[in-house]
Image (cartoon, helix red, strand yellow):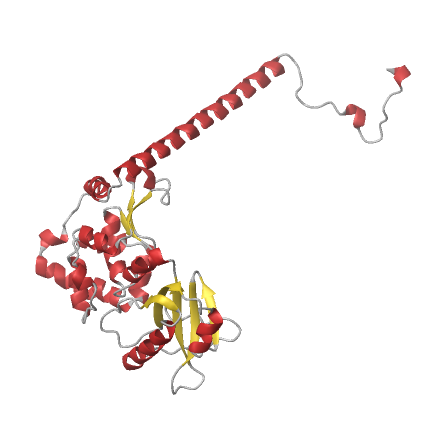
Length: 331
């Protein structure tokens, strides 16, 4: 996604940004074509106040028997296609603009992932905006669902620290205190989207201090206009409006770590994960102690032999260059 799939390589294609009127015209036309190949195909809800679009994004599942890459390519008049990490990008001729193309991205997913991916990629940078606040209480949203990072494990193994809570969009919104019905509709203005984000129950303004942002967050301030406007314009104005108490709002991660597994019925899974982790740590500790003791015993043995004048080096006088093995009669 992003409109850059054909900008590299030995023969790059020109893919200019798409004005809104043309974007929605192409979207409706391509959606009609793609619907003949899948039971379900939709576009994530677009972000607000976009004066142009980089590409067309579609999520699809449950292919019909007529589906094939070649059939889709022919249907939408593709001149080139590339696949990357489950997404197929098609270069479609840009109307009335010679030697230019529109990038259409089609992500074909399992049926069980369809609703989640549409949810996850809706509203532009919304989840990037929510990210710093959610990370502050140990929550992560990714391509598979909502996860809790277990504090005891996170410092040593971030991947193993992640416990999936749910992949149900409605459950996620309820847990975060965000209105489900409003989420289904496009926000007409950036400020409306930003206000919605600030209504999340775990929102913490202090999570957006630039020195505390991750490398990816800082990159977004340069590359993503919506994210930069939230950070540099909306949030400072909101802090002035709300005052010091709102700016210093603090939500205890420990409480979220305790409450979230109970909320989603994952307390037993959390206990099992912690038990396995602790058992693994104990096993590693025993191995280190065992190998350490073996090494120390070997050093002690070597020292004892050395004090008795016994050399630990192999005797190789008989195989020096130019020497011969003695005859048996000389032995």
